[in-house]
Image 1 (cartoon, rainbow over the protein chains, first blue to last red):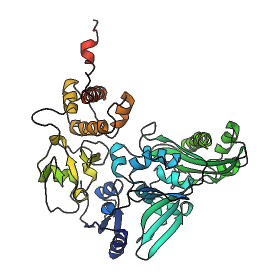
Image 2 (tube, rainbow over the protein chains, first blue to last red):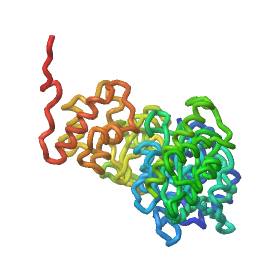
Image 3 (tube, chains in turn red, green):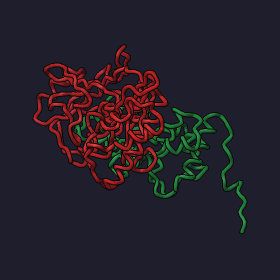
Image 4 (spheres, rainbow over the protein chains, first blue to last red):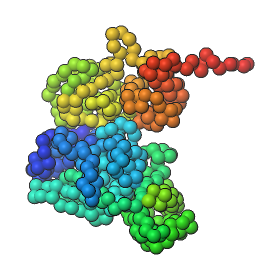
Length: 282
Length: 165
């Protein structure tokens, strides 16, 4: 099983990569290839040109920029999972992505750009209020995470754009990620997952974002949860009341791993667990 | 690229998968093709020090890389401690998953020389064995870990368990 024929380039820098991307009718960017190669082997996707950014130097860094943590396009899941600079929600989501071999090659930025409906890290970057930095032949564009995920496997990236970096604001507070994996525990894609971020001041919750994955067609902010939790003391009963609103406004999607009812139940359970842990981390 | 210490150069079609390059071009058939969908891990090799599934990697992505396959483990007629562990603790039945399982174990022990049973089981979660139920594979990796730390491995369970009729 191998892909249809395609042209291949491995540019030396992002400018060259953006130029290559704009040169073909149907080009795809490849970082680790952990999502792209299986799709090409199954011939769900047959690009004319693969632009392999894997040889570009300097993209494999997690940098502290003062007000934000910047994750480069070639930072592997294993690197994100092991970095103390990365907030807990994203660190955990990276540690629970794929298996060891996948985490050694797949990239955080690639997973976010791929936008699988049950991937872990998109929910984490959404809850953390990240900014996506897209690079194209015409320059650089910043996209807020809550405008980035459009639909299943569809993001706000234009055909000529490369997701070059994800910036996570150093907003303080605490975060966490919880999931039930398809193979049980935390293994494999999420049947349902929730990433939470909270900020406390003067004994109450002053800000909060919760993002769900695996339950709908895209990672989604659970806005009702944040609305219910902000202003409370963050006690167990406040968390429970807020988590009960997890699926408010969310279009649930039944799949092989669960009915709508089951997904809704899991979304609430995972939201409560993630919030409890995020509050403990705050 | 460099494979098992040998420099190799070739022109390949971009769509050539690393596993096909290793098996068909270099004749290194120890790396197995199992599921071909990145699940089973039979095709695991070590690329620049980290395990990778060679069915989900293009040969061109490995341009300039250092690769170790199952054939590169034994040195001077001596089995690698992980290979010895699989032999001594019978970490296989049909053997199909074994090369990938061994490469994953080598990768795990290079990062964690003293893993707990739980860490071993999670460390090989990218490798599927349909025969053994993993029990002896875990024992084999524990054997190798002890050997590589310079310790005496725990005796085999079948030597210490009493059998009552």
